[in-house]
Amino acid sequence: MTIWTPDLTGAGPRYLAIADAIGSDIGSGRLRPGERLPPHRDLAWRVGVTVGTVTRGYGEARRRGLVQGEVGRGTYVSNPGRTAGALPLAPTADGLLDLEFNYQAVDDEREIVARILVDISRNADLNALLRYQPAAGMPAHRAAAADWLRRGGVDARPENVIITTGGQHAIDVVLATIAQPGDLVLAEALTYAGAKGAAEARRLRLQGVAMDEHGLLPDAFEAACRGGAPKALYCMTRLHNPAVCTLSLERREAIVEIAERYDVSLIEDDLYGFLLDDPDPPLARLAPHRTYYINSLSKCFGPGLRVGYVLAPSQAAQKITAMLRATIYLAMPLAGEIATRLINEGTAARLALKRRAEATARQHLLAEHLEGYGFRPSATAFHTWLTLPPPWRANDFAARVRQRGVAITPAEAFVVGRAAAPHAVRVCLGGTSSRAELTRGLVILRSLLDEGPSADTIVV
Image (cartoon, rainbow, N blue to C red; front, side, top):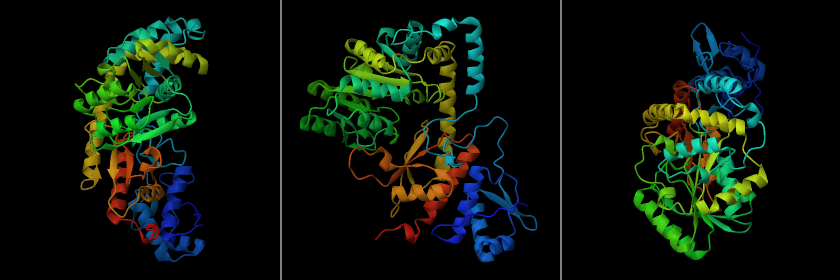
């Protein structure tokens, strides 16, 4: 039995503070799986509360899946039953269950990379990979990238592909190339937070364009074009982050027609397209002369492999390359070599199918545990968009969920400009290393949704 004593400083009910402290100390490693907690009476005397308060605190911790107990044996820290080699809970640094980061956590990358690195050390020209190379990327790397992008339905030619340090870097390089500080750039009213950050860093005026549950509204896009002189529209046509929706062919064609009339460049972020069997052409195939198509291997393989791709219009490829050269000179050739081998040997394609299958299984768990609540389903998405029932507000809900050991993202992180944030949150399904851990997180979400907000979270 441990002599654990919780820190109960702060406002709020003492029993919740006990449960929160258990979760916090599990995350920090102070409490380890299998450790026995103090008897109710001992802990009550030590921290100056009633035995009933400790009982309620332990009960709340048990409901969150943090502890387990048996009559006559005591209360013990739960063991999540991880198998050897499984990933840690979350990259949140505080032990939270990760339903916040939008990727699929798997434990097969290490063996794949180790094998490829050994092969590179034996059979590749390491000197070449450690020297300066063309800023747009080595020819073999650009050829492999073009092969990968063609899987997404675009006519990718190696000479129009520029290799970047991940998708985020690709967004920044494109924005820096086609827009100057003060220029207007449009995006969906809800958009990827990284694109917001890139626009802000470049001192661009980012304006949101209205959307519905099916995606960007062409009429709203045209109104924004009439009301200003936008340089570009940044958008996600497939498995939108965070709204999940995929744009219909009719809307894609309408967006291209409007962009042609008002001479607006299109930045198409398609990082999640590999999860879909989408027969409809992306914007980059409908309007290759004005579309900057962005992709990467981060979501398919792992975010630590910082390799991204820009498929630029023919007339703009050299400008993109010049901007990349002016910022980082070139993306790391060794990372490009790893990505190239993943593509050429078929591993990336096999992993894409594996990711789809796992996403489908996790979507089934989502449907099972959040049935009756307003989430947006998708057969293969890594995430969902959950509209909260009244009187919940997104920030309050996210804060309460975090107190119970789960990290999610409130809508405000994705809202463009000063528009009011919807009462919704993004819930990511892939960040936990197992379906059992995802289930635990969904159970916590469901329990809080069923309970509703407490009186102290409602502002009158």
